[in-house]
Structure formats: structure tokens, C-alpha cells
Image (tube, rainbow, N blue to C red; front, side, top):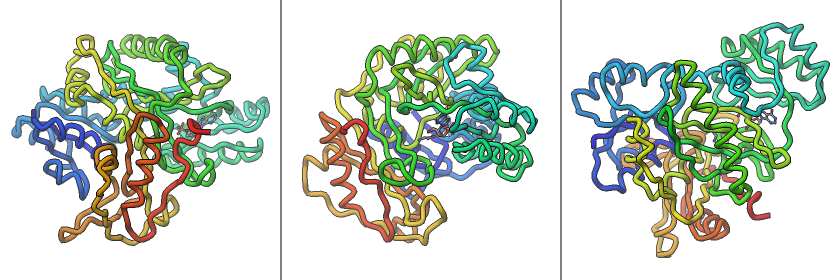
Length: 421
Ligand code: AMP
Ligand code: GLY
């Protein structure tokens, strides 16, 4: 097939790498990064109508959308109107991520367990609710804020200030014209992904992300500093509860709303005393979760997404490898505070055959300059290791980290600690 992947991060690189290894497809990336050009061709056509025309000319058989922004902007609707096969939700269904207010209202409507909340654009209504709550209190801006729109306030005054900053447009502009105020959930977090075709779904092994920049989950939030899967913190009972209480009612409900959900349903779960409570939905793969999940698939990634895009998942018996994956993000020196000077990336030749065969790099914030690979983004790359246990996979991921060099490189050294403690 001719396959187009939208996006430029490690997530898109990892989808591309898995498809590249199938050895039967031609890959295109829009816009891609400084390493995706080793897997296929980077193109630069930003307008979605122009891109759809290009895809028709090039006889693109399948388009896969990585990030949320093009989904919320309706790229799937535009491609479908051009009779192109594309894997991802419509703009209407992508509102599950694009608007936290919409998402919370749908969770309530479909009876999916979630934190008690109000959504409002009134400061006094928010303040009354805050007065009735226990601390900590969670305040969220309605719109897309690149993962930064959530404040966990340790006092009622702090919560009220966050609400007023959001509603007055100080914090997030238009994304903060409505807020969600909700109860704090105390438990452990999971990332669960369901590949959906509107009616049917396939659940991937549950992963854990590491959102804070520092070891032991300290410091500011990031896009994610590492991930591993499958996590032993999830047993069959929890998977079953997530399917019965979350995925099935959501797919049924979205269909009834007239916005059937096709694409990746990313379920942010907090397990509280054994019960999965839903923090949020995203409508795409997590990054870096995707980088460890793609290689764990035995089913060809292209087949999974093609069947997802053509309402054919019912006929797929998804196969997952019986191993573990651990991904360690290597970020640039000033991440997540500010950008860093471009730095050349050097990867040592790997002589250890075990390591060579059970690890790889997924490139993210990189560009190419005169044949040199440069670290130019915040999250630069992900070192991914595999093995028959989490410990072995983790050790391989860190061994690979030791072979990668650039000025200022920064990692967390405790990825997968929750599974290993
Ligand atoms: P979100 O952007 O909704 O994923 O929130 C970012 C992070 O804030 C989540 O990954 C959680 O770690 C945390 N968070 C969000 N909502 C809650 C909540 N109700 N209780 C506890 N932690 C939360
Ligand atoms: N790793 C979390 C996210 O992609 O939102």
C-alpha cells in the first residue's frame, strides 16, 4: 500500500518504523522529522484540501493521523469527502479530546465512571462548587492546551485563582472560556488504547506513562518522559471493567450521538481501590506509549489501521507479542522549560547482539542538516528496549541510552519503577 502518516514526533516515527519493517509498503510523512526520511518520503503540504488532492494523485491507500490537532480540525472529514481511506475520528468525534466539557458531559451521559465535576463559565458557580469540595481540587481549561491545561490546586484559594485566570482568558486564551472543576482522584494512572472502527474495537496492553520531568514523579508535567507495557498493575478484571463500563458504552453512545468513534480511543484511567475511573479521553495514541506498543504488535500495524479505517475490525484476530517494552525519552537540556541549542546526535555502533536485536531508537524532535542528525526539539528521541520481563526490557532501554550522545541530553532513570518496586 501507499501509506501517508500525519505528524512529526516519535509516535509517528514508531508507526512508520513498524510499517517499514513489514517490507511491502511505500511511506510518506507530512511533515515528518529529520529521521522519518530514512523510512519514506517527507512531504510538506499543510492545507488539508491540498493534501487530499495530493493523496488522490499519489493513490494513497491509507492515511494515519498521529496528533490531535488535525483531527479536531477535521482532516478525516476532508479526506473521506474525497473518498480516501483514513484512520482517525471525525471532527465531531474528536471533540472527546478537543473539549473537556464535551468529554465530561458525554462520560456522564453514557454512565462512564469519572470524577465528580461541574463545567461552567461562571466564576461564582465555580467558586461555590470549590467551597463544597475537599482539597486537592482539579481545575481544567476546556480546550486543547498541549497537556498544560490542568491545575491540581492544593488549596481552595489556589483553585479559585486558577478558575478566574482561565475564565478571564489570562491563562489559555480561548481554550479557557469554559472550565471543568473536579474532584481529585488518588490512585495509579494507566493509559489504555482501544483501536475502534465505530462499532468494534481491539484493546492494546495497558501502559504507564511518566508525565513529570523528574525521578519519582517530581517537577513539572511534560508530554511524557517514558512508558512501559504491559503493566502488571492491571489484571483481567480491570480490563473487563474497562471494556464493559467504558469502551462499550462510549462506542454505543457516540454512535447514537451521530458521531461514531473511529480511530484510537486513548483512555486515561485512574485506578482507585481497584476501580477504573476515567480521567479523560484523547482521540489518538499517547506519546511515548505508541513507541512501545507498536513494536509489541504481532499483527501488522498497517492491517490493524486499515481494518480500523474500513469498519472491518470484527474480522481481525489481533495478536500481541508475549514480551514487555520499556521506552525512555531522551530530552534536550532545557526541556520542558525552554528550547535548547541544536546539538548533534551521535549513536555508537552497537556490538552487543542481544541489545541490537532487542532495542531501537524512535526519533522525535530531530532535524537533518548536511547529513548530520541534530537534536532540535524538546523530546528528542525514545530508547526502546524489549524482553521477557520488564526488568530485562528496562535494562536494554537504558543500555541503549548509554550509546546515544548529544550535548545536554536528559533522561529519567526510574522508568517502569511502579512495576518493579
Ligand atoms: P489531563 O490533561 O486531563 O490528562 O490531565 C493531566 C494529568 O493531570 C493527568 O495525567 C493526571 O495525572 C492529572 N489529573 C487530571 N485529572 C485528575 C484528577 N481528577 N485527579 C487526579 N489527577 C488528575
Ligand atoms: N503520553 C501522554 C500523551 O500523549 O498525551
